[in-house]
Image 1 (cartoon, rainbow, N blue to C red):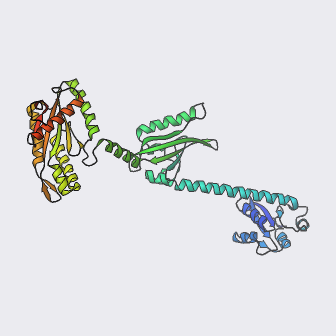
Image 2 (cartoon, helix red, strand yellow):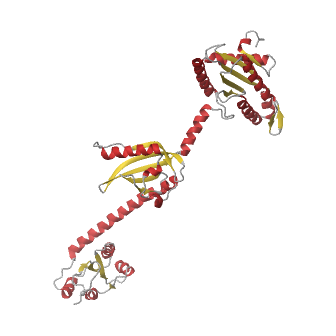
Image 3 (cartoon, rainbow, N blue to C red):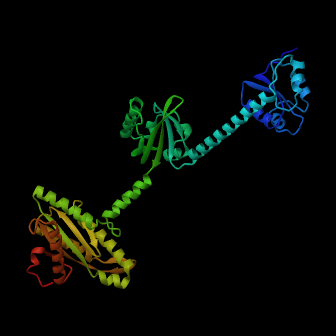
Length: 425
């Protein structure tokens, strides 16, 4: 007898129904086994079709299959058919070779089916997990305890600009700004060398990350530790929070700035005045508060409409910002009213020059979508500490002086000290 060599342990399967098909599937995935033939009286048995697809000899006669395998004396025969004569036929060809059949093969078949079911469930579970990882909006990054990147999902590719091929194996530090690199090292060290268990992971920590093109951006990171195969790994969930930061900045801006003119609002004006008075006390200088009310605004708003009125207020704001220093503040506190905080304005002559400058800049015509319009301005002025040291009284005094300016013919300015001697309101 000539012994043929195979790349794996030779196996003959008798019976190509569900059990034979499942057994063949399992053996096809195992390099230690080579199925040299499979037989079934049904030419359409699923196991025969699978064998043909994989180039394995098939038979509809078990005796012919056994004869065909006689050159493989160490062949194992699995009898999944209901033919009890198979054992005798195998003995005639292979001597006292034992055949797996009857209850033994039934138990084996059940084990194979259980393994197949378990494998299917595992593959389904892994498939679902991979689908989540591949399609989730957040970046999922896996690193080993040395900081080498082991996993990088598509969302991470989009966030950071690296492809998996570019980034796998590189240090996680290429994705972090320098200050956050040190914090990363400290976190890894803490988790690897502490003797305490149950150390909480990083949750929602905001940090500065770096894209492939060098662009920094705000990122929210959650990081947790896992042990797989006796090795420590860390899984990071990264989220680009650029849009959230911009929205937060916009909300914060709207809380302190007038939405129409983008000038500071009343709240920010008062904050600026508090700081200015504190510095003035410390450095022994004056602060001037201007209260400006437009003359003729209501007529334009009523005749041309609110859109024209809004455009006028925007143009007024633009002119007023150009009249003051960077260290000073102009705010819109409501309607057509504006207030100023002037730090260390100098002499009253200098303050008067600035008031006249504001009135002059308002006297130039405004182009409201092709229509030229004119307004004026009445200004009231109070001085710290000359008139009062109270923040509230400074604003009230400037307001009172503004009304005196209106009663005095408008388009002019008045100091608070003139209120007591001015015309009745």
